[in-house]
Image 1 (tube, rainbow, N blue to C red):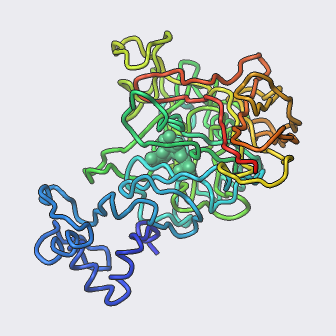
Image 2: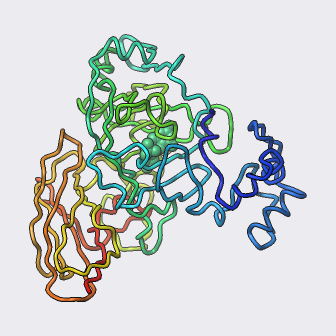
Image 3: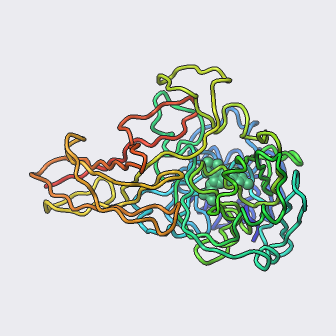
Length: 435
Ligand SMILES: Nc1nc2c(c(=O)[nH]1)N[C@H]1C(S)=C(S)[C@@H](COP(=O)(O)O)O[C@H]1N2
Ligand SMILES: [Mo]
């Protein structure tokens, strides 16, 4: 199965496809079911799409082949091997996980979010895959996945990957980009080799200051050789022994949407540093300037700004470690209780550091109760917290959670607004009705 076939169109389209899949595909998307795109939506296809939407589509000429209108895609699209995710976009595919489905200490592959900037590669087979390490190194190398496994120590670690834009949906005024609410974060168990071991074997030259990561996905425009995203990290961060070049996720091969057959996992920093479908690592003596490294991408103002403030381009800096954060994963928000006591629990994590405490409040932050907090399974794994709560009487409550890192930094109630909608670590809150 090719990668793009892992994505299924929405349920109402699915019904149409159930009758005569070949014909429906051709009519609706103007392409044959073998994936050969025939051009733009027109004629009967346009009429079918219009009927499904219940309205004519004035700008239909601009709709690319295979395009699923947002009104149909919302929450109904499914991705093979994923379960319960909320789909934000279909092209590229972006999907997040509702908090109550992130309760496991190790996030199951089916619940790991998907953040794609471009079109995933069709071929995600480990056979014939190679990784090139070049640029300013003494021994440029091209390695197969078998080479990686035989030449380097294989390690397994639980590592948090969080999108830099997680929480953007709560920005006011809004910030452009994927409207992630809370679930663009996960802590799966990754198996691979240490990124640092591979870099050491390649012999990084003294003048290297930055890495550059290249994946096999393509730009949405389909232009040959144009990359959707290519980020990198300072060489000091690259050498952190917890970064992995991973070929397995939760004991099995990577999910095709999570970078199969090979990806970087650079925990603690924005998820964009963890290049999927990894083909090349290039060592440079300048700050990498690939797509989404420059301009305002993955950058925040160097100083605090007012919500909505315009910030000159030169006043932005590249995001490094992600801030301390927590997520209540049990119970689900909106729970209706007949008793007065309940257990609340979830996870907390803190960029390159460690969480030192988590507090919970049921009175809108007037008083706080400290939660039990576990150590991480390994550095960069999230930490479990839990607390027993008793409500004084019937009514509407909110449970708020606030994590503090080992340097004393904790989560704000409000959002530290920035133009591109990054790093929202405001406290998570859930609603509880006690009857
Ligand atoms: N090749 C490639 N790698 C990529 C991306 C991408 O679009 N292409 N997206 C990045 C971003 S922005 C994030 S947040 C993480 C998400 O990883 P996931 O999709 O496995 O959850 O992958 C990163 N690696
Ligand atoms: Mo991201």
